[in-house]
Image (cartoon, rainbow over all chains, first blue to last red; front, side, top):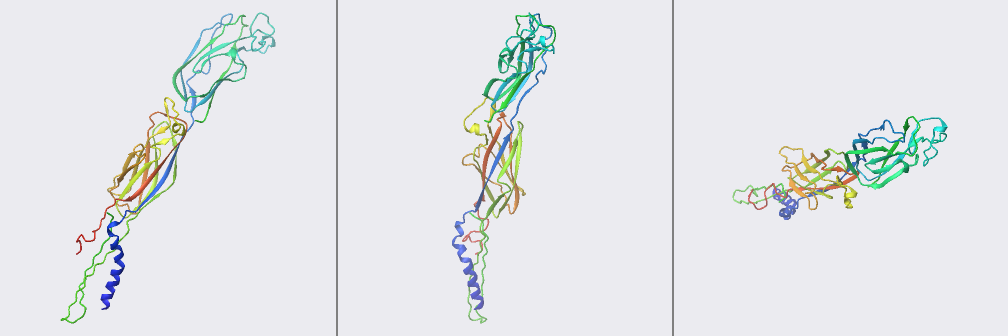
Length: 186
Length: 181
């Protein structure tokens, strides 16, 4: 009798499982993970000549056009572009106060009447055409805002002098042109 | 059907020692272990540095199931998505959408990884089985991609939802199938 009672107790424990035996729903779990990737801003001009030499200029500054080819420009976001000239023209390298140009628009030599102490030049290429006559010294000129991402290879920039009305003083003429690319958020 | 552990016991127990009075009792006992599948991702966010070249990311995970594992994977965006692309902005030569290949793996013999493209995982997602019972088993979610165009600068995001469950099958005997009768 004791044995029988124990058996019934065991059966009593197991019975509820039978009731749901055929309707077991598979248990499960759900989890989410966020993947966040970052592509860094990359804007660069490569393979350009850092120095352009017009060579021997004519009496009034006429010179051969210099082509700089094989330039690569890459920017993977929108950007602003500007160009800035140190002098606003090719300026005679001289410390003589009489051999300085009168102003940005008057390139005549300060103290040497009939001669020029500077000469304008023109740049044509990736961002269009710019004449240094339109670029004041150390004042950036806007070439565009929110320009589209670019991946340009093998581009060319040509440089040429703008012949003036006065003969140039003898010497070396220099300027530094700076292109600035400012990436913007997309 | 869900797996279950079934035990049937039949006892023929004499009610007394008297040879003339014979009593017979049949007793059937069954036990049941509830199906269970748990998934533990090591992180809820994975940060990736994207380059112009191919890349990959690995998320370790653990799975604990007492039945054969079935999983489904869903991608919110169908790939890593840049906000500009989501807004509809398009720039020739560049893309703001980076599809990837995802592989769910379990470190177990006989395992079959579940692999799918993120594009296929969009919407209803993809489902499959690893063909193993991953009891307290390590695994991983592996992502790989190769950009087809230059990637726009910025952040790309996607959310993968993983659901693990039993394959919906009983590994034990069903009641009434006569297995232990």
